[in-house]
Image 1 (cartoon, rainbow, N blue to C red):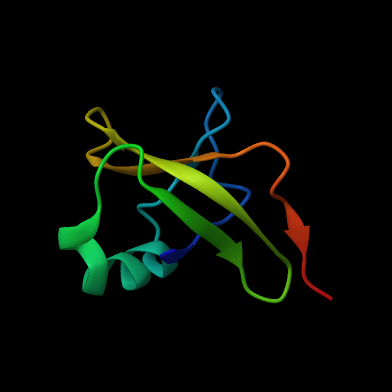
Image 2: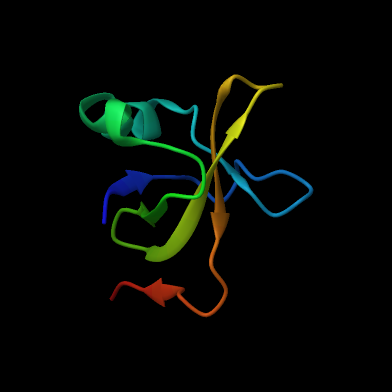
Length: 77
């Protein structure tokens, strides 16, 4: 599974996370041609947590969003 950085402070009202921030874009750049709606990925915050998520293209923000998959949250110790 592809791993993409995210920030828990960059969420929207529907529970998705915005992947248009610099750390996310850095991870997306080498794999951009493989991304598609409903692709299952891992989103992570370095040395804090990670979880599985489904990608969704957001037309309004012109970027990828990640919708967390319930029950996959793991805290990194």
